[in-house]
Image (tube, rainbow over all chains, first blue to last red; front, side, top):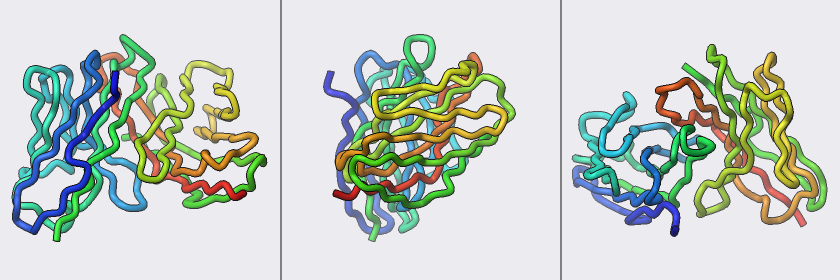
Length: 116
Length: 117
């Protein structure tokens, strides 16, 4: 098990461009989370998948954001028409939940987005 | 909604000494979990310690222990025999344990701990 992996690790883009981040969770984990972390802040919840179903979306997730988890495996987070305020670290995490484990979320190293 | 407050943005400690990081939370839930996560510079966040709210006994993991005061909604982390590798951002986090919830974490803003040689 190689842990949660995220790609790309860093992305620099111009305002108005679209970007997509990918997350590969730990293979046995059915739950997948996206968080956003800005400088000096704790991670903020964006969205949650159980298997392939997106079960919760934060109000932070504007219409420009879309997330998918086809076949309940990897997940993508797309940001359309990026704005400078989107600059942040995007963290992916996966877990078994409490039924199959301790509830611990396992995090990837994050994808850092810089919008110029 | 749950809130988690970490009132110490930064702390420092000398190697081998003990330091305590503070965390308070607010919730109306009766069943929940509390976590401390560590985020080293440019590295992924990892779990340090976990506490179930229904357990009165404070959790310990080697040099890390918590002081869980449920009535006061306080959850502090004590690091004994601090090591240089403990230098990191520490986040306190809350998770509802209600059946059917999403088991997502709500984080505080973090405390940057620096261990000095």
